[in-house]
Length: 213
Image (cartoon, rainbow, N blue to C red; front, top):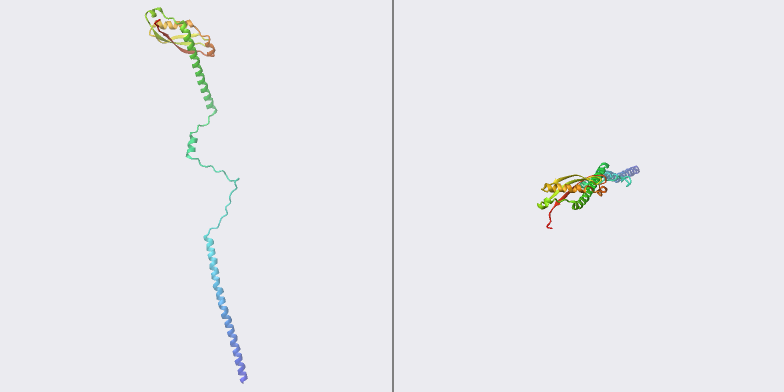
């Protein structure tokens, strides 16, 4: 009897020790489970923070730089001074304008040459009129003096024609005497080489003046 009671007590004690062992194991494991469950939300929060940072920071885009051979040349905008210089610059001359300029230059040169020829003929006429001028005796006795301006056409062959009075001396006798002197000269043969086939009109002043001698 006592032996069976003792066995029962041993069995009860062994069973209690097993139950305590399980409880202590579960007690030890439960904090581990709690710690694991407590760490998982922290990792999730870290992942969420990283995701937010990725959303906030824009993704870097890859920029492709074109090569120097494919880069189109950039035209710098014209400044105001450059625009004014271009607007002030003369436009290129066309062929027609160049021809007109050449004709104008040729006309100017021809006019200058004609003036030079006219001046040479006037000089020759003054020399000849000095030897052929007729001073009427009545005009000398009456002390008539004056300056006659004559118009003369010199033909291409040097002949003197169309002799006329442009400005009178104030004395008809002196005017007629001047015209008669030019008719007496008649021609300037040397002028034919200067005129080159073109007649010319010249003005010749004839001066009648008495000297003390």
